[in-house]
Structure formats: structure tokens, C-alpha cells
Length: 264
Image (cartoon, rainbow, N blue to C red; front, side, top):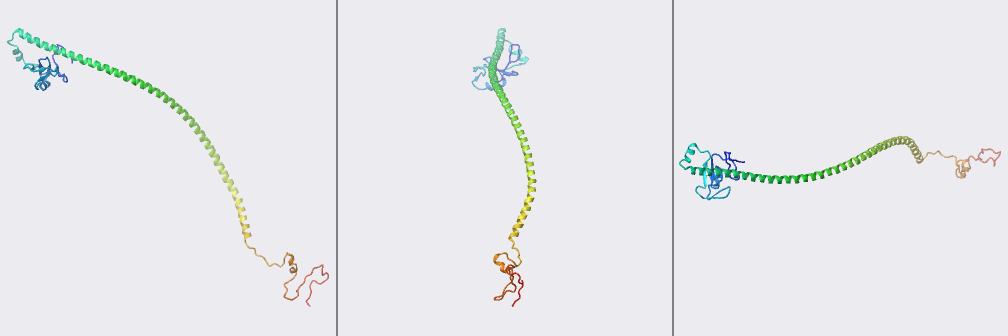
């Protein structure tokens, strides 16, 4: 915080405080002033050391606790009886203390400003570097995006081609499936028609086979077609030593004879 000669408020010279002074303050012979809190804590130790410039304060009046807003009675009596040159000397020293505080504050502000400017330059430089690196990364990412778009377009083209091929295969499959169903239905109808004659023929074959395996019933044979059975064809059974009851002879051998002969 900047301060001028027209300002009515001093600042604590403690590095970490820098607060406005009010009430009581601690003034040192090295022209530094501190708030009542930090002055009480810092100057209670012995030997006393100035927190601002590290100067040793061993004198009796090197550290004074003063009231910043004295009463009217104090103002009327503090310089009473002193010669004018003494009063002017006291006033000159008091004004010099104030001027030093103002100059010190300006120096501190300039130092703070230069440090802030240095930090700002460093931050600006760092920001520039980061921006450049981000631009490089962004350019790289844009290139990658472009390449990925090309790859995606290629995949889309391949996908469309595969989809068209798949649709064509599906159409061919549906067509073949229809042909297969029609052929299977026709084969089933033809198979049913062919199975009926085959079953009838099989039944007939089975019946014939069964008839061949069965034993036929024959009546007694009275006639035989074999050559050795010509004599038995026209004769009856004979008893042992008897003549035949009936004799049949050939017409060529016995012409004119009676066909039946009586027994003697």
C-alpha cells in the first residue's frame, strides 16, 4: 500500500504484517515502526533486535511505545517549556521519521512491483511456452483427427461394400431356400406315389413266397406219366400168384378180341 506525506496512517514494518497502525505503536531508533501486537512480542526478548533491519536495540530509548492519537492535555504539555530551537529540532526529527517511512514504503512498493513484474514475465514466458506446446499438440491432434477421419471413411466404404455383399448373399440364400423347399415338396409327393406300387408288389412277392414255402395237398395218383408206369396205368393191384382181374391190351396187338376177359 503506497503512502505519502499527506497520509495520516502509517503501516507496520513487520514483513508479514503490513497493517495500518492505530492506537499504540512501537517506534525504534532505526526509524521503524511496528504495531502493538508484533512490537510487544518481538521486543519482549533481550537483546531486542529490529525485525525490519536486524539492528540491535540496546539503548534505553531505542524502543519507545507511543500513542498515535494523544489527548489534548498531552499535546499541551509535551513540548511546554522547551526552547523554540529544541521544539523545531524535535519537529524536524519527527518529520524526518515520517519522510523515511514514506520513502521506505515507496521502496517496498517498487520492490514489490519489480518482483511482481518479474513473476509476471516468468508467467508470461511460461504461458507462451505452454501455448506453443498446446499449439503443437493441437496441430498434432488435428492431423490425427484428419487421418482418423480418412480411416473412418475407408471403414465406412468397406462396411457399405460388405453390407451390399451380405444383402446379395441373403437374396441368393432366400432364392436357394425357396428352390430347396419346392424340390423337397415335389420329392415327397413323388415318393408317396412310388411307394404305393412298390408296397403292392412287395405284398404280392410275399404272398408268392409264402405259397411256395407251404406244402401242397395232393390227391392219390391213379395215373402216372413215367414210362415205367405204363403197365400200372391200365392194371389194378394183383395178389401174389393171381392173375389180373382185368387186362387191357393194346388195340394193335389184340384186334377183334373182347376187351373184357372172363376168368377160367
